[in-house]
Length: 411
Image (tube, rainbow, N blue to C red; front, side, top):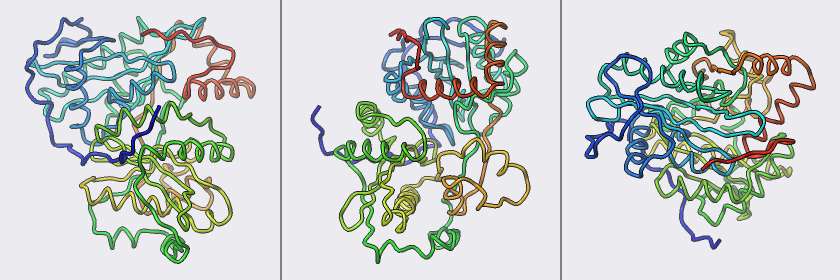
């Protein structure tokens, strides 16, 4: 595929928009859950107009994540997933819902995960009743359709976790999404942002070291694939390939939901970062860099972060999200005690150097059925070997391959 030189650039945030009036009739729907003033539709095949309406709702919700956009679902087809939508209508208008990514594994059945959802429009009528209807529908899918369903609710949606727990879900340690992250408030002037930097970052050597940062283009995707592969060897994750990265660009960049930056030393590209923008938040998504001594000494990734957060502030974003803390750091940073930053893993220690605020997402929950499967899952996680198997499976589900399992993708 020939690459056309186009700049990766996220759209300015628009968190005040409502979904707007519907001009098309509400499609036939299956009424699920709750007696509130909402009609809930569950579908795996939405027409373009409905997908566009859903995307506009997602972008209108403060602190929403691109993982709920239809373009993200099309991207995740590369990992064997398809989208299932729970859409709730009030007075003929889309008011809320969820995008669940579903995958069939032969011998196991269908599993699904819901990352940073469900969502409700800021202009929704009777939000409490709407939430009940959506939570009921999600719970019913977990009971009747999916063998495993993992849910990480979005920011400030602890009521969703509580509602699902009351409907048969339980607390989850599956880690389908980061449990906590570091978020930098951009509603201050640049001088204050600079004052919040750690001493090491304030004494940066970017200018005298010949470090420059430029906005990336589609032509830089092979560079990103190369740098991610190099970084994965050090950090122990499975990198995405060029096909996945190209699809990510094609789905998110044209709609303004993605931006990228390249760090160079004396004109040589040594680091690249891809970020997504949604709900007033610019979030780090992928970071790859050359770990040679001169690059580490010059702290090129920090130069990219500084450029990216300034770029976000200039374009009206409210927050800069560093993309999640590791599971091991979460209980430490959320303990309420003073955090010894130097005791954290290197990647998490770095994210704290910009002076951001640590925050936790609501309680993640899961439903696993039947009871026998849940018991096997629990027993597996209690042994060292079993935990290693689960960890490998999670990495495989992320990139699209599970060792020893055949995957059937239903389209």
